[in-house]
Length: 434
Ligand SMILES: Cc1ncc(COP(=O)(O)O)c(C=O)c1O
Image (cartoon, rainbow, N blue to C red; front, side, top):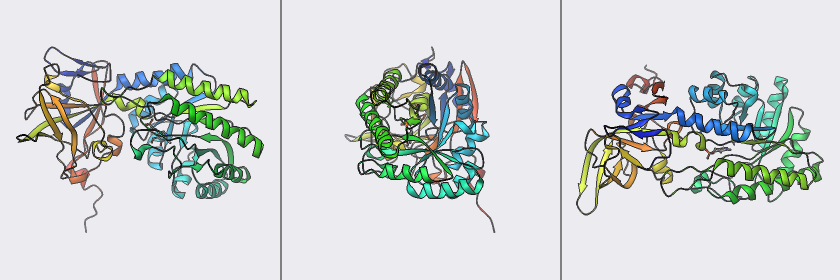
């Protein structure tokens, strides 16, 4: 069984357990499909951010990129570890604030922050913005002035580094919708405008080169570029940066073919490149921020399904269908993402049957796993799909009017419901009847 969390075990009834809780029991209690999140795993990842980053270096702040998984419970846990938050919409901000997050530890990202979102953020004390484009400089400055407050701006600069998994999640190359280009000096013009804007204060530069990154060199190359940008800013505009946000994108293992880098290896390389670069150029060391999302929650997630119908096309393939699909996991269809799974009630038995796991949505592309050896899945068995903690719940939909699954956290032998399952009434909650 390939599973990337030490919090998963198998009991003597062959049942998969998470944090000591049998997934059979969870299925009986909450039904399927079900998002199970190992709180033990989430806490151990946040503890890494604290122990190996916050406590190791002076003047640093890890932000949890909450687009990966956002609900009240996760923001509450993040606070316990002194971690800040990366939000990309007023919706995410609203949940983080409702969970009691300190607004000064929230950084507002996004390539098209709406005037209403900017006003929402600023009027609630969320003043740290990762500024993405010239239009944003204009409207953020106007709104900040009108409200008598300031935007503390970190400027998103595109380093021209190509990295990351699927093309849709590569953001560091020249041709991207995000940020200010570096190859033609556009970012310097942006900083110049911010320096002149009465409603804004320039703080530093931001970099995010993509997601699912497995090469250390991508980080060191990007950071080397950023040291160069800091020097260019100093030389041409006469200001030293106070903050350098090195972004997220730390790859995790979805299958046995993925070999992620160790957190300390990544952060040491990032810090060393920045420290040496700034010292060499006689610049004051800035505050360093990082913003991993998937790394914190990805391997914590297990989606539990019930196996239903099957179709055997002799000599072609055998499909087994489950009670969820692209509505709870769009990554397979969107990115052709690969996963591992196990029949959760036969978890340590031989995986001797080749099947393709299909969802129940009305699309031929609704295939969750193509060609996987499983423990002869039969109708009524439970299928556990691993590493579904990031970009699953937050990307879920109600296509075909399937209610969204519940989310259960497991921790130290106990489980707790953190998001309830949607009901049919929820599906028409926004319909207006004449
Ligand atoms: C600006 C920014 N920061 C951080 C992240 C988090 O990436 P990951 O979940 O791969 O760590 C993303 C992901 O899209 C991002 O766009």
